[in-house]
Image 1 (spheres, rainbow, N blue to C red):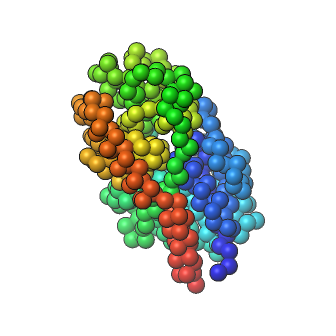
Image 2 (cartoon, one colour):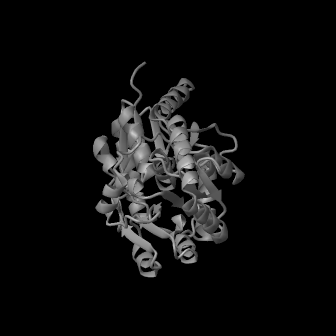
Image 3 (cartoon, rainbow, N blue to C red):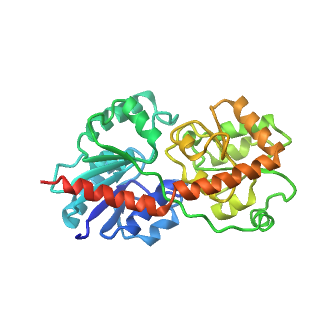
Amino acid sequence: MCTIKVLHIIARMNVGGTARYVSEVVDAIPGSVLATGYVQGAEIEDSSVSAVKVIRIKHMGRKISPLNDLRALVEIYKVIKEFQPDIVHTHTFKAGLLGRSLPGGQYKRIHTFHGHLFADQSFSTLAKEFITISEKLLANRCALLITVGAKVGEELREQEIGLDQDWISIPPGVNALPHHEKSAARTELLLPHDAVLVGWMARMTSVKNPALLLEVAARLPEVNFVMAGGGDLLESIKASAPANVKVIGWSDAQYFWSAVDIAISTSDNEGMPIALIEAQLAGLPVIATDVGSNAEVVEDGQTGIVTSRSVDELVAAVAQLVADKALRSAMGAAGAERAQREFSMHQMISAHKEAYERVLATRR
């Protein structure tokens, strides 16, 4: 079969699971090119970007800016005209809004939802209404809609988005990170050697709800927590963290997951978090709020504990795992085995190749 030319468009490739998911697909499938803007503010661009062919969209970023967004739209149009893709594959809301707003061409459109914004506290009610209306309209311009996790797709359809469209879920493919001896990893990160450590790693922004982790920690003063990640809330989290929480900012995931004993996520909204899959591949039990597709990553009672966003439930889950080393070990081993089986890179790449071939097979 001839090489399929796919133009992937995403607003920015900040450190995190979405960037790694997109870069792996671009890198593995011949004919793929990435068009992206630049990270903004305190964000750091993911190192995976260096491994793929990139076209920079100078004026594209996550923040809404009518003038820059119009400029970015023109830049995207020029890239499409020059590249002549078979498929334009957009990722996340901002790039999806711009990439799917352009007049139709000879190419097919695919959009991937790596989560959604309905529970994001940083967006106003009016902004969420605009997003919902936009997604309903833009979904109709796509030959295929992809979600990273089946639950995310269900929640989008509950909002009446893409009811008449074709949907598939493609879980992320995740490679195990290099493992380091626990003592060496703790030395590297300047963490205590003689305690059970509960690790939280994510962007420190409202949708990840780091403040909820601080509430949990305040209720468990005898338990040691460590938080890693950059973002707009980093300094405020540092300032308000209780004595049993160490906030270390951005950290290399391979050392972080090697250093801690339990992984925890307190997010208000998620797609299918790669960080939690990496934690499982490192042999850690995971505690996660039941949002997005978290429950597709963590098998409740088997590989970790899935809770509501209740402080009481999270406190109980942490206390249970901290007190029971055998349970931590059993859940960690089960999680590693399941993650290897369910989140292979081969499955993710193969699913994308099949999706592209399927979409182009319908082209007249």
